[in-house]
Amino acid sequence: MKRKKQAIGVFDSGVGGLTVFKEIRKKFPYEDIIYFGDTARVPYGPKSKNTVIDYSIQNTRFLIQEDVKMVVIACNTSSAVSLNVLKKMFDIPILGVIEPGAMNAVKVSKNNKIGVIGTEGTIRSEAYTKTIHNINPDVIIYSKACPLFVSLAEEGWANHPITRDIIKEYLEDFKTKNIDTLVLGCTHYPILKTAIQEFMGNEVNLVDSATSILSDIESVLKNGENIEKGKDLFFVSDNEEKFCKIAQDILDIKNFTLSKVKLGETWYVDRL
Amino acid sequence: MKRKKQAIGVFDSGVGGLTVFKEIRKKFPYEDIIYFGDTARVPYGPKSKNTVIDYSIQNTRFLIQEDVKMVVIACNTSSAVSLNVLKKMFDIPILGVIEPGAMNAVKVSKNNKIGVIGTEGTIRSEAYTKTIHNINPDVIIYSKACPLFVSLAEEGWANHPITRDIIKEYLEDFKTKNIDTLVLGCTHYPILKTAIQEFMGNEVNLVDSATSILSDIESVLKNGENIEKGKDLFFVSDNEEKFCKIAQDILDIKNFTLSKVKLGETWYVDRL
Image 1 (cartoon, rainbow over the protein chains, first blue to last red):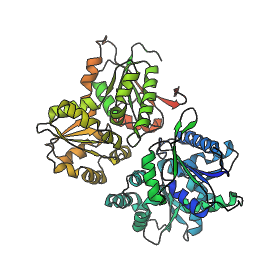
Image 2: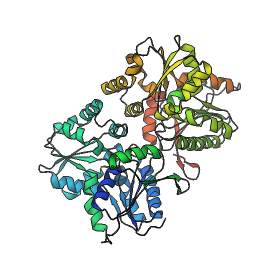
Image 3: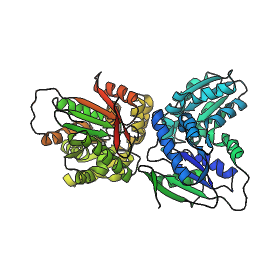
């Protein structure tokens, strides 16, 4: 589809990347943004590296077909395993959320003790550990997969007492490690931010992917003509109605253009 | 692939259908069984009807390509929305788990008050309600989606205190309804059976899909030559190792043949 200007492309396994979309929209009001949520195959977190790479390649191809000038991988699991593959395969800039998150964590930590939480795929990849140690090998890192957090966020249980119990179960160990910074290494986790902050205490900095990636995007963007407000285009592979509802909650906007895509040999689009 | 005899084909979104596989294997020791777990796209429960139908058609095509004489849909979500479509599309017998579960529930209930739990997709479809009311319109049915149960089963938290809290959260309402029968309308739920029985009390009958479907299979089978023990063949679309581990736990067998399949234009097989 041809628009007047090329858009920023953003993809995620589902709704989690909307926390990233929201920050990009706020910071770059004149850019068109195309968001793709792969809701037909969500979640990516428990899936294998090769499967997540396959899905990420298909998602990137779809965004390029929709005419984007860069692709933001608004999903930690996909960033952790597919960023390098995508960079080699495609000519346009591809940005992941791991590196900016890691940089930000190292910057805000005073005592060089950092906790990292994410999906099984992200933690298994050790992407944060490697990236943080590339920046500063002296940092001590504690990391833990918290797979149920995604289900709790999607269930809408952000403020449920059981969510607090599960946070305690997963994060109790971190309390004894004297960390001063915790990376929320999954785009779903900011939805549980209040409860996580409450458990960890205000002295612990929570670093999330959404805000960390903005300066990376800025460095890629050329100055455009900032005349016309940017457009938002949303695509999902399933569950348009559920996506609409959650997107309206997270983004606080009422009307937006949403289409459904279907994976055939390549993704193709059923316009709503 | 040609084997000496045609197999019973079984598919599920992931590992949950192994509870059904186990009962089929026990009851029919001389049958070959081919199991396909769609672990690259699990879970089906939160996905839309049309997407689950698409996936179920692909899975059935794959099993037929592997030479099966019938297909057992060992997944309640898929049975609820795709059974009629598959029956129309394919020539071999297709069996779902909803009807046998419903029949069994009506049979064991003395007071005609039945609870049904399942995924969002299964409960939204009202498949159990309609099927039970076809058998006996006087039954009073209470139904509830329990989406977190699948994650808890897959997380291995069957005996975790938090699982007991979540069971209470979901099933508390049922306690005031005087039901004497509860349908575990998702093949993952038998993994949490002990904790669910404990909460509901021994006076409530738990009906699961695994045992209910056996007589349906028996009525389709022709008498074979019961000379050679049946073979087990497993296929998954992702995460072979994780599947192996869970399958060994559920089935209590050490060695089995597992291959990985990948969805291209049709599913194709990478032999391990």
